[in-house]
Length: 386
Image 1 (cartoon, rainbow, N blue to C red):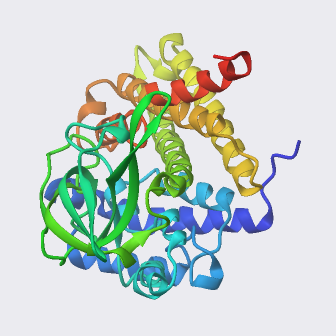
Image 2: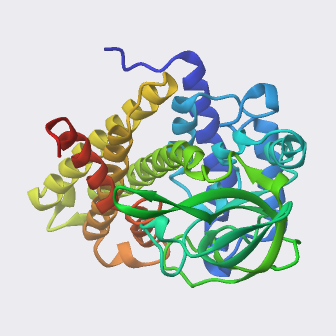
């Protein structure tokens, strides 16, 4: 088993690491203070990431993207993860689901999103339908050549930076052995469409400067040509999209934990108490050992899933393992890092308190830890009829 990166992948790591240190780290304090990324900084990061070949790295090169495989994208996300999420998310990863675009959708949505001319966001969550996505109430009713959409979506990340939304709505019902089940269809909806309104969301303790919004649809009329994928089969493409985003969460957590561990290790090696470095006390040194062990385990799970994804052999449980373990590992590592630094760990002169806050959401979005454990355990029980 070869754990060495190829020369190409190592070059990707070096490029992403340098970009993180030069383009993200210097601006973290400003984002924390303002609670947003200044528009001119957004454009600067976007422009420089396009020049560096990091923008839309997950999209095929023949379409203008970075052309990286899943392992390459994961390595980039790992390096970016060390920085403020509000900053590194500007270097867009257009939703893989946009590859389902056909006909005029390619020139109207896919290609401009890859080139940075347009920005997408995803709307699935609703106030009364969180993990139970089939319980969504937002409806799309056919009316001639159009669909009339009504309902509300919330927790819509970076909708304030987007030009359009990839919307999922209930478009019908079917009878199953477990009763009636809603059929879901995906739509591409421009924010200037009458009846589509983006309003302020909630103040979140995690990822300051990276905003969530609420989107209201009131008799919003969308032509059938805006369907993404096939009618009533919206989840076919979503399943592929969920895998890539969960892997992204895992990689970001690994990158964030790496930085937290580095800060804690340097502190333990230089901080003097009772006449010696605090790292020589078992109460501190054992913490560092546990942090490093869990971090390595999370990174191996994440890179295994990415490596197999690049070869088309990854399974949902393998991605779920990477996501649940990495997100919980990062919470542990950032918390222990703060404990090692004591009171200074909670001061905003250092990034630890931000990283501690930011990583709390990783156990919730893109599938809660409980959902990931359900995926893993179900795959174990299924061969036995469970």
